Length: 415
Image 1 (spheres, rainbow, N blue to C red):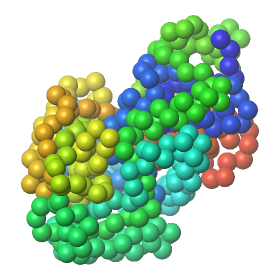
Image 2: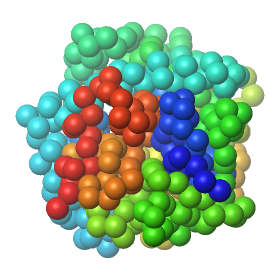
Image 3: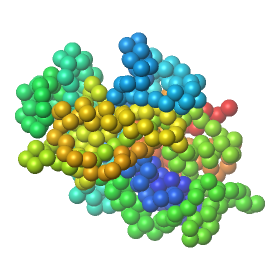
Image 4: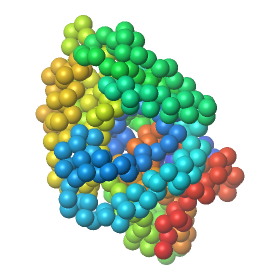
């Protein structure tokens, strides 16, 4: 089965690439080992985060570093064996999180986030998924007056860059979310983001739109990718062999496992995350997604109940699961949020592919003709998938991207 392009990976980034390559007139095959949207794109907090104009830096304060060493924080945990393998990348992450470097990175990062709502809304309109929109905006909840007012300053800085918010005091938080238990200093309500009731369903709806526009979806093993004598690419699908002169590798944390066979590696930092759904308590609705700023977890109203998602666990993708992080988050969340019984027997787990410089990687794979990649979006693959797809499709077809794509080039990690 011959196509113009094969896209490997059917998460939000891969589906976004497939749709935009298709929109530029190319015949596209989309392949994954599972149905679209069942890996990392399935398990996030379901927010299209227009406000996230700065990526997640590694905190450099001594207090955070010392408390992190104990491996008992709720927001960040680690496997010692994984950290040992990642020491070089983590040191680079630490250096890139220094104020001067971080400001430059954030300016570059914002050029992508600025287009996140627009590119999603266009696809949402075409895919007829209005029923998946749970609401607009979310709450960033604070217990400490000092930390709340420090965050007010950050919110005001972002407002100057076109991001909208509302400041709430404790009484206003109680009025907005009466089911929350306890007294809080206040919150920031980001009003631009879109909350989705089922992130996996949104990816699947985009994939159906791709299929309706005559794209082809395939189950198969991306690791069977190989060169033909003619210089094309082939990969084994369940329904036959796919072949194309161009291939896009969008396999999240597994991307470099494939590209390394062709000489390209990049220092991916895997940040694993867990989630669990809980039944809703009668008469105690949660009206919007809430991020607990102190402990770094999220509680979001979803199709399957209230979803509790954890912060980051530094561990290799294939390392054994350690659900102690979500157990710790649940214990704290139950004291604040209206959580009923667990819906699933076991927590879901996924892996975010993060880069030491906090920027995604997309573009031509260096020194490998016909191979492109799109990965490394960290916490924002769900948000940035469509704009990444648009920019990559422009590059593949020789058009001028509307954003300066040089800061995101794979070349920056070439050796």
